[in-house]
Length: 347
Image (cartoon, rainbow, N blue to C red):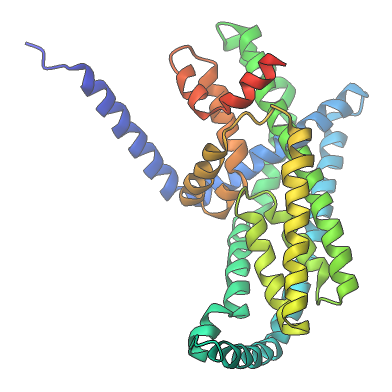
């Protein structure tokens, strides 16, 4: 006598998912560097293949790519560490100025019958806490990069195995053409996403650096790098990047300057996010706005800041994999921006 029910299959699947997610959560220290290595490989893979097509030896091609990655990483990390150190040194002065602004604001609001305690307002407008949050986020990201030697070694071996892996996969696959097409789609989508996101992040950061420099805001290059990096975090990245600069403008030059900085960030992010980036991305992203936000929350919870930075490419990869099977294509449809797809088909 069998006690099997169709619902048991669903419960077993859900239990398996919970166990897998728990294992990923506890293995974050291992999985995060591996994901970083995989996505660095996905980004640099086209450059590797291009160099190989130009008859550049594989060893030299890998050396050139790794050297480029190291130089860029060293440049960004050195500017960040120096600027954050100088910012921390000026923190007592900023906090003293902010306390004076809080006292003035409390007195001003009291004239209109709004009574606030200075201690409460200080908690709300605390530049140290805001920068502490930004700093801790970057520290967690840098923490995953502390084992940079392991990451680079994984990237080197992945790049060297790039062409051989495709050949091996075609041998073991039941449908080599379909498998290679699927693999190419994943690689091309991720590479295109990072290229466009890097370009739009630069376009976002450059005008902000220029305007902040003209306004005399301290450490404009630091805030430009923060904008560039946090632009990869969907939805909330631009907000997190703006808050410390607005508070710093308030401390340095007052409320009018803070309003101007807020307007600057609002204009630049809206122009880039609503006009330039969608035109460049086209329908290649294929994820609904709700899914992008939920993926940010999910991957951020599962893998920390690294998951937040990689939430969109991870979800896009999952969507492509789900779309490759008839039994799981419904999941891909739920994740997709069906309205955009319909518009794309109608046009």
